[in-house]
Image (cartoon, one colour):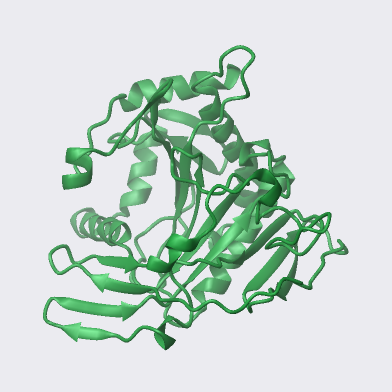
Amino acid sequence: MHRTATTLADGRELVYFDREPGAARDLVDRRPLEPAASLSETRLDPVLGEWVTVAAHRQQRTYHPPAGECPLCPSRDGRLSEIPAADYEVAVFENRFPSLATGAADHVAARDEPLHTLRPGDGRCEVVCFTSDHDASFADLDEPGARLVLDAWTDRTAALSALPGVRQVYCFENRGTEIGVTLAHPHGQIYAFPFVPSRTTRMIARAEAHRARTGRNLFEDLLAVERESPERLVLRGEHWTAFVPFAARWPYEVHLYPHRRVPDLTALDEAERAEFPGLYLDLLRRFDALFPAEPGAAPNRTPYISAWHQAPKEGGAELALHLELFTIRRAPGKLKYLAGVESGLDAFVTDVSPESAAERLRGAASA
């Protein structure tokens, strides 16, 4: 993997990732951009003890532009985009409309009042462009292309974890307008949080309780049990296993674990990195095969969220790196909405049993 870093016209960082050195990458952003001020702030919910990010400036972000005006496509034919080069393999840059940004403290003052705790939204949000092909999807990448994205995720995890004040790095992809994606170009995001999100905090607490009770690691025990439960297994390689969790929240949800417990992407070894692309692409293509397109229609692309759970910089010794992939589609033309009990109480009700979801995913490879 070869990386080339540059700076955009408004001071944001851009990094090109290539399989081999020597690719022509334009490093000059010719757009007349002024630096954007981040007004992000984080507020502590006194009832739940959870941080909420307030980023009202994001209302101005680009929303469903025509394909010819996509800001994630390369700069070609006189049209300038976020990517100055005329082509690229993988490109990562700071979001122009970030939820969290370095320098927020220059514009937002901290507040410590009874029941009103507020901090500047210091952190960083990056956009990861998986390919220059606007009409592609992650599942359309070949294995070397998927490996390059993994290398980019790893590079950015290391770089962002080193920033002052960052406590956790979260790599994820939203795909599909049903999920809320506003740019059709195949891309993901990385958030560098100044706090440990509540989902991670709960996982750590459960793992620590399991350690105190059994003397063992929760995630190692969970993986061992699921690897022996064929009714929920989807894929199994030499170094990774994908399974539908016993208490899956979503209609079709798969967790992908390396067999060796590691805290984050930077700790994977070469054998684990080499096997991941093939297994992950297989999973994504199985998701697309769940709901076949009508004859003569465009190929189906199942909406999904793909998320890497990584240990925070401190206090996450019991956490294990794993990827969570799920779709909100429960049947052809039907979505799983988070209504009263899910949104109001965080009490999920699923419409598909985990065992039948795993069976469908195992059979989806031949669809």
